[in-house]
Image: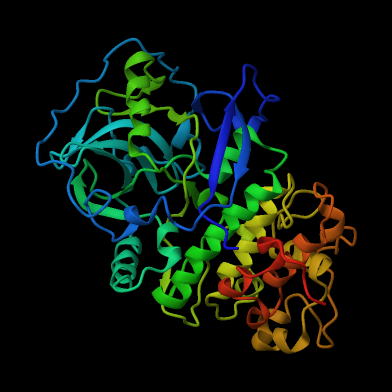
Length: 463
């Protein structure tokens, strides 16, 4: 039986879960509800969502516009909110390389292109801020990703254009798990021009859901559903789209929405209880991001800002530090298998409270030798023939006989079996992880192959 669209069901409780950690508090969000997570993952494939993902277009589900009547923009509250002190750093200000003039100063209520009105801040990153907006023309909520003006390379637009050209014909089931790009435009700021991407609206990322609500890790069935839908998206990208995502991790796995109107609650909350903000100047205000009680929806793979078109081999730095695959650490050309490596680590991170690889030694120092030492502890030593693909890089960490030089101690107790602490029957899960995490990229299972793995399908593995 095929696993259907991931359904996340949340039960409202009258009490908070155990208090969040300092990291959770630093999300700086307003959370509208207290939740306990459960999940139901089996249902007929795509019966609820296929009509929403027929193309990357500005049209409503089903391919037709809801109405040609434009809405009027709303005047947002100018008082009734908490003002945060000038000496307190919040949101993007806490980024290590933050420079205010790189970011466009979006204000709640701003209307872009005479069409998109910003109604809530959803989040931020090192190169953009994200805002929920009301589409005054198509009567739906969308997400605006407002990029910094200093971004030299914008990969998402050409990647989405490339993907759209591959969506003609039969519907691949993974198309429904790729976040839709609806529109794009540029806006002029004081210091330069900012690219704005308009995406279908989505809820929280799985990373933020775990950090706020389930720091001990999600239930196994929940993770099976999420990983199934991630693999469906990657199977489409690798076999039909010829795209390497390169940045797969729980922060880029978003909970979508079956009902776009659920985002109306964000707007209503801003009028009932305006979000706290920091008034920098007459031209710039920094708002706290707002989170809403999650509802059921599909898993959406997002953020194609580092994606590459074509099978490669490609070169260059990619992937979050802890997620780097062996071929990126060893400066060997990479391709689709780097995404499969990320699938294994994403599955681990969603289930487990501790990361499999931290790239740090026992003193907390971050460096490549510490990362490679952890890989050796979990996977065993790398094959000599594979190290020979880049002899100069090999010589930094191994001698001519292939012996580890000891630039970082190998943490011998840091095996997968020792670090996995939550599952009663861990054998199927660890077998799945080992199919995704291998030294040699060509030995990793493909997305299509992993979709048939017994850990996901529930079938008894064959010996």
